[in-house]
Length: 124
Image (cartoon, rainbow, N blue to C red):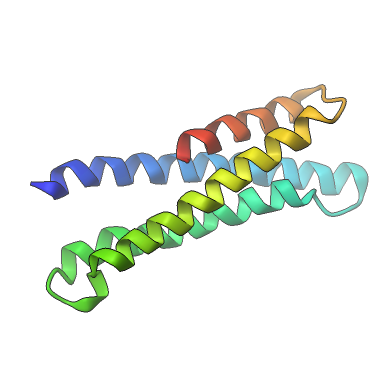
Protein backbone atom coordinates (compact mmCIF):
# COMPACT_ATOMS: atom_id res chain seq x y z
CA UNK A 1 0.00 0.00 0.00
CA UNK A 2 2.79 2.45 0.88
CA UNK A 3 4.56 1.71 -2.40
CA UNK A 4 1.57 2.94 -4.41
CA UNK A 5 1.90 6.34 -2.71
CA UNK A 6 5.70 6.55 -2.71
CA UNK A 7 6.36 5.59 -6.33
CA UNK A 8 4.55 8.61 -7.89
CA UNK A 9 6.41 10.83 -5.43
CA UNK A 10 9.73 9.34 -6.54
CA UNK A 11 8.77 9.87 -10.18
CA UNK A 12 8.02 13.54 -9.48
CA UNK A 13 11.34 13.88 -7.65
CA UNK A 14 13.13 12.37 -10.64
CA UNK A 15 11.41 14.70 -13.10
CA UNK A 16 12.22 17.81 -11.04
CA UNK A 17 15.83 16.68 -10.55
CA UNK A 18 16.24 16.21 -14.31
CA UNK A 19 14.69 19.62 -14.99
CA UNK A 20 17.01 21.35 -12.52
CA UNK A 21 19.96 19.38 -13.90
CA UNK A 22 19.22 20.62 -17.41
CA UNK A 23 18.60 24.22 -16.38
CA UNK A 24 21.69 24.54 -14.19
CA UNK A 25 23.85 22.79 -16.78
CA UNK A 26 22.67 25.32 -19.35
CA UNK A 27 23.49 28.26 -17.04
CA UNK A 28 26.90 26.79 -16.16
CA UNK A 29 27.70 26.23 -19.84
CA UNK A 30 26.60 29.76 -20.75
CA UNK A 31 28.61 31.27 -17.90
CA UNK A 32 31.75 29.39 -18.90
CA UNK A 33 31.37 30.39 -22.54
CA UNK A 34 30.49 34.03 -21.92
CA UNK A 35 32.75 34.93 -19.01
CA UNK A 36 35.48 32.36 -19.73
CA UNK A 37 35.41 31.47 -16.06
CA UNK A 38 33.87 28.70 -14.00
CA UNK A 39 30.21 29.01 -13.09
CA UNK A 40 29.24 30.43 -9.69
CA UNK A 41 29.28 28.05 -6.74
CA UNK A 42 25.50 28.40 -6.34
CA UNK A 43 24.91 27.03 -9.83
CA UNK A 44 27.46 24.27 -9.36
CA UNK A 45 25.91 23.29 -6.03
CA UNK A 46 22.46 22.89 -7.56
CA UNK A 47 24.06 20.89 -10.36
CA UNK A 48 25.57 18.63 -7.69
CA UNK A 49 22.26 18.39 -5.82
CA UNK A 50 20.55 17.21 -9.01
CA UNK A 51 23.10 14.49 -9.65
CA UNK A 52 23.07 13.48 -5.97
CA UNK A 53 19.28 13.21 -6.04
CA UNK A 54 19.30 11.00 -9.11
CA UNK A 55 21.80 8.66 -7.46
CA UNK A 56 19.90 8.73 -4.16
CA UNK A 57 16.62 8.06 -5.96
CA UNK A 58 18.05 4.86 -7.38
CA UNK A 59 18.65 3.70 -3.83
CA UNK A 60 15.33 5.04 -2.55
CA UNK A 61 13.37 3.15 -5.21
CA UNK A 62 15.34 -0.09 -5.44
CA UNK A 63 16.12 -0.75 -1.76
CA UNK A 64 12.53 -0.97 -0.47
CA UNK A 65 11.39 -3.01 -3.47
CA UNK A 66 14.23 -5.53 -3.76
CA UNK A 67 15.64 -5.65 -0.24
CA UNK A 68 12.52 -5.33 1.93
CA UNK A 69 13.81 -7.49 4.81
CA UNK A 70 17.49 -6.63 4.35
CA UNK A 71 19.31 -4.03 6.49
CA UNK A 72 20.10 -2.16 3.27
CA UNK A 73 16.56 -0.81 3.26
CA UNK A 74 16.46 0.11 6.91
CA UNK A 75 13.99 2.89 7.60
CA UNK A 76 16.67 5.12 9.13
CA UNK A 77 18.94 4.69 6.10
CA UNK A 78 16.09 5.78 3.86
CA UNK A 79 15.33 8.66 6.22
CA UNK A 80 19.01 9.67 6.15
CA UNK A 81 19.14 9.69 2.35
CA UNK A 82 15.96 11.78 2.26
CA UNK A 83 17.26 14.19 4.92
CA UNK A 84 20.59 14.76 3.19
CA UNK A 85 18.83 15.33 -0.14
CA UNK A 86 16.41 17.75 1.50
CA UNK A 87 19.26 19.76 3.04
CA UNK A 88 21.08 19.92 -0.29
CA UNK A 89 17.98 21.19 -2.10
CA UNK A 90 17.11 23.71 0.60
CA UNK A 91 20.63 25.11 0.72
CA UNK A 92 20.90 25.13 -3.06
CA UNK A 93 17.73 26.97 -3.91
CA UNK A 94 18.20 29.52 -1.11
CA UNK A 95 21.80 30.17 -2.17
CA UNK A 96 20.85 30.65 -5.82
CA UNK A 97 17.91 32.90 -4.91
CA UNK A 98 20.18 35.11 -2.81
CA UNK A 99 22.82 35.12 -5.56
CA UNK A 100 20.27 36.22 -8.16
CA UNK A 101 18.75 38.88 -5.92
CA UNK A 102 22.10 40.68 -5.54
CA UNK A 103 22.83 40.92 -9.27
CA UNK A 104 21.70 42.87 -12.26
CA UNK A 105 19.98 40.03 -14.00
CA UNK A 106 18.49 40.18 -17.47
CA UNK A 107 18.18 38.08 -20.57
CA UNK A 108 17.41 34.49 -21.34
CA UNK A 109 20.05 32.95 -19.09
CA UNK A 110 18.76 34.94 -16.13
CA UNK A 111 15.26 33.58 -16.69
CA UNK A 112 16.68 30.06 -16.89
CA UNK A 113 18.53 30.56 -13.59
CA UNK A 114 15.34 31.84 -11.97
CA UNK A 115 13.43 28.84 -13.30
CA UNK A 116 16.12 26.56 -11.86
CA UNK A 117 15.59 28.24 -8.49
CA UNK A 118 11.83 27.68 -8.65
CA UNK A 119 12.10 24.04 -9.67
CA UNK A 120 14.74 23.45 -6.98
CA UNK A 121 12.29 24.88 -4.44
CA UNK A 122 9.62 22.48 -5.74
CA UNK A 123 12.11 19.63 -5.40
CA UNK A 124 12.83 20.65 -1.82
